[in-house]
Image 1 (cartoon, rainbow, N blue to C red):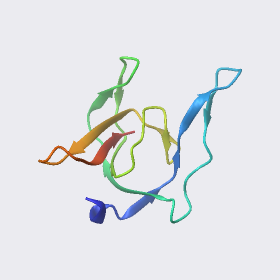
Image 2: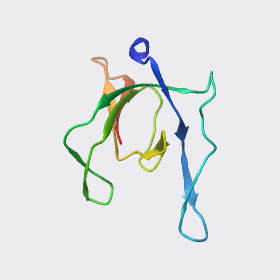
Image 3: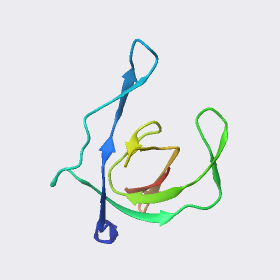
Length: 98
């Protein structure tokens, strides 16, 4: 799957909340060779986020790096993550909804 990931994106991982209740993120991972390889496709439909709220999808990504809900990809919050598993049961990538 990695050969299909021709685009790059900036990834900032969610760390915790600060004293004011605002989310804190790690520094961006954007410089090669640490850039996150992705394939961006338009998103249609909607996703139910971790709070149970249905939100519209703006973009879908295919990526090899594991991300979590609340992480930022190109400054857009990750709303959903689904593992892509091959026939042998090995995770080969992730479908990410922003």
